[in-house]
Amino acid sequence: MTLESAPESSLPTDVTALPETTVTAGSEWWRSAVIYQIYPRSFADSDGDGIGDLTGITSRLPALKTLGIDAIWLSPFFTSPQKDAGYDVADYCDVDPLFGTLDDFDRLEQEAHRLGLRVIVDLVPNHTSSAHQWFIDALADGPGSETRARYIFRDGLGANGELPPNNWQSVFGGAAWTRTTNPDGTPGQWFLHLFDSSQPDLDWTNPWIREQFRDILRFWLRRGVDGFRVDVAHGMVKVEGLPDFNPPAYDPNSIGNSMSQPVDVPYWAQPGVHEIYRDWHKVLEEFEGDRVLCAEAWVEPLTMLANWVRPDEMQQAFNFSYLETPWSGSRLRAIIDESIEAFSGVGAPSTWVLSNHDVIRHATRLALNPPPPQGEGIGPRSEIAIDEELGLRRARAASLLMLALPGSAYVYQGEELGLPEVIEMPDSARQDPTYFRHHGEKYGRDGARVPIPWEAGAPSYGFGPTAASWLPQPSDWDRYARDVQAGTPGSTLELYTLALRERATHGLGLGTHVWLQGYGEDVVAFTNGTVTVIANTGTVPVELPVGDIIVSSEPLSEAALPADATVWLTTRA
Ligand code: BGC
Image (tube, rainbow, N blue to C red; front, side, top):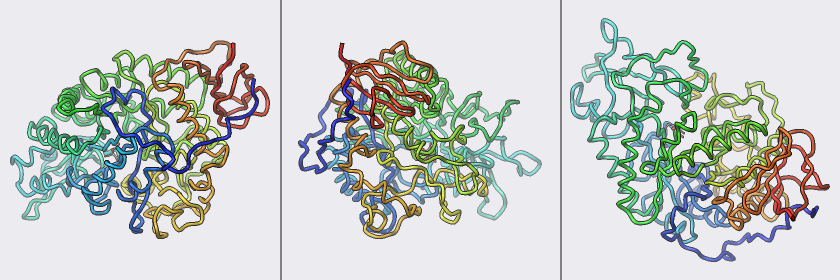
C-alpha cells in the first residue's frame, strides 16, 4: 500500500480560479447532492449588528463553492419577531429587515446559481408566529369566526374553562395550550402550540390554509428556489377530536416529548399529512427544473419515514435515525442497511446527516456516551466531562464515513471547521425558548448556533465587521477559523474539501455500497464503486488492504487504520 496520507491538497482557495458553472435543469440532482445548511443569523454579518444577513451570505458563497458543496439550505430569514430564531414566521413572503430585503435574497440566489449552487429555503407550515396577521385577526374576531378556524382554538375544560382542552405538552416544555384573553378582559378560549406560545399551530383541515400555502410555495418557486426544507413535516395533522395523550410508559422528558414518535402520539406522523405533500408535489411540478421537498420529520422506524418520500410526495427526508446513531461499528452498519433498504424500497435516495441547528454538534456529541436527548443541550452545569480531542477525531471520521455513502448528505455550517458545541455560555446570553420554558433546567440549542469563525484575530473572527455577535463566541476560536485551516494539510476544512472533491470524482453519491467481509465488530468496511471505505470505531488498529490512499481522517504512518479514523482508498488487485 502507499503510506502517504491524502495527497497534499492542491485545492483552489480563490474562487476566481474556479470554473464558472451555472445551475442547469439537471435531472434529479438531489439524489446525490451535498447540501450545506446555512443558519443565516450565524453565518456572516455584513452590517456589523451581530446578526448574520443575506448580503453576508452572498459575500461568502465563494468559500462554499471552494468547499465543493452542491446546494445551500437557508434556515428561515422571513419576517418574524424571532422568538424561535425565525421559526416563528409573521410573513412567509418577505424578508425580515434583520436579514435584508427580497432584493438581497434575489441577489443571493442569482450569485448562488451563477456559482452552480442550488438554493433551498425553509418552509414552516405547522405554525405561524403569533404576530402573523392571520393570528392577530383570529384573536380579534373571536370564537366561531372564520379567522379562528385557521388555528386550533378550543374552549377549556373545567367549570369555567380554566383547564387546557387536553394534556398535550409543548416540545419546548410546559403545556401545549395557552389561554387567550377576550377584548373585555375576561379569560377566553385556548389555542394549541406544539412549540412556543408565540407559535400557534395552524389547522390543516381548513382548505383556506391549504390554498395559502400553495401560493406561498409558488411565490418562492417563481423567484427561482430549487426547493424547500419542510419544518415539522410530521406534525401538521392532529388526530380528530384532539384526544389526550397518555400512554402508560410515556416519559415526557424522553425523546417522545421532543420530536420523535416512538409511541403513538396524536400529533406526530398522522397519515393525513401525506395528502398535503402529494398536493405540494403537484405544485412543484407546475415549475420547470428539478425542485425538491425535504421533510424534517422525526419519525421512526425508517420504514415509516419512507412514506414521506414515496414517488408522488417529497424527494428527501432527513435521516435522524442515522444522526442519533452512536459511534459504534455494529450500530452504524445496521442503520446504514436499514436506511438504504427503507428508502430504496420507495425509490428514494437515503439522506445522511450528523449535525444541524437543533442538535449538539457532532464534534462534541460523539464524545458523549450517551448524549443528552435531542433539544436538551449542554452547558456549564451539565457535569459532563468532554474529551474535545476525541470528539473532533470521531467527528472527522464520522464525516468521512458519511460522505462516502450513496445518497445525499447534509452538512451544517461550521462542521467543516470541526466546531464543537459551545458549552461555556452564560445563562444571560441564552436565547432558545427551550431554555426559558424549562426555567433554565434544560440548556436547549444555543450551543450549536454560535456565529462561525472566518478569520483568526479579527473582531468576531470575521463573522462581521465588528465584534458584535448575537451569541458570544468562545475566546479560543482562532484555531477553528477558516483562514487558518484553508491550505493547511490535515485541517478539518481540507479534509472536507478533499473528501467532497473525491466524492464527486468517484461518483460516490450515486454509487452502491457493498459490505466487505472479514472485519471485526467495530469496523465499518465497504466498497462504493472503485473506492474502499474503512472506518474504525474501536480501539485496536485495523490492517489496511493494499491500495492508494485517497483521503483519511487521520495521518497514516503504517499499514493500519488507527482507532476512531476513516480512510478511503483505491485497492489494487
Ligand atoms: C426547527 C427548530 C424549530 C422547530 C419549530 C424545528 O424542528 O428545526 O429549530 O424550533 O421546528 O419550528
